[in-house]
Length: 346
Image (cartoon, rainbow, N blue to C red; front, side):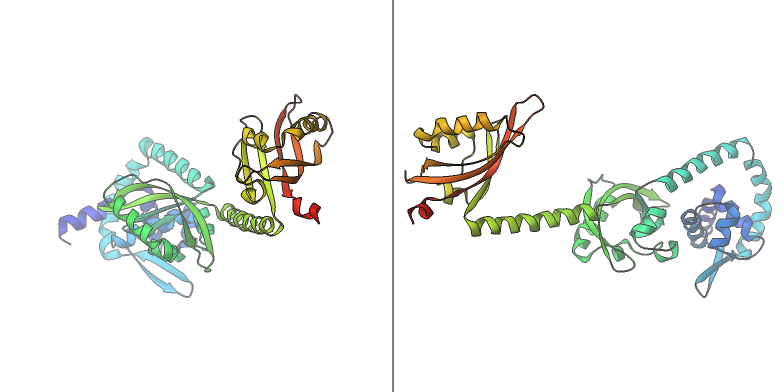
């Protein structure tokens, strides 16, 4: 790196009140992240993010001892700068800096209070995560995730989509929300909904991402799929068709053996009435009128139909319930039906 670029990088790193606070705190001696958080009264993820920037700018150095990493000033680079900048810093602590601190404090509060996970990444590597982000990935601190590739925390089957989105972000294109599976530090998978906004910092491209844990929602969807499959198997095995007739729009939904029982798959009320034997239609209408007045609106009735596919007369048993509105109006009829003809012949 030539001198002009080095100077630009160094002063770019210094152009932030938090980084200046960190440098002055380290001027008293080396400290770990926890000690800096306590002294500066800042969020741990924010301190870790700025430590990374100062380290990459060679203004500080670090060493690892046990489970902790200790940071100290790179005196060769920082000592003369601190001496010349100290006067400038006093000026920055005036009214203009006070306003900047208030804005920064509001931002810090917003990030801490966000109920969603917030991440930033540059060139495919995580540079920041809020507390919810740490919890989402099962991390105890920034050291476990900050600086690592995003792909490390994404399920293998979602890697192609992630890389495609990285390419679009590099082109500065806006992205739609999408769902993917993340892999926590403990190996457990979580489903998330992701919203991203491309960013650029120091010539590096990346994004700010907000993640919402939808694991419970996806698990419910998977259970519903299993339940629907089991219900379908039960209906198929018993020769029963389940149905719902929405009386407001006259539409009919069927589940199971509609064609085996009715000889067709009725899509509306008109098709149902057309199948009912003419001699039984008055009885069915009377049933509707009488049962709509009962507390439960439930009834069981046998009647005949004329199948539209082969014109056979078949005897159907129907168990149904009428859904009544607040004003006594009929909203929906739902129930199950099965063909009893062969049983009655026996």
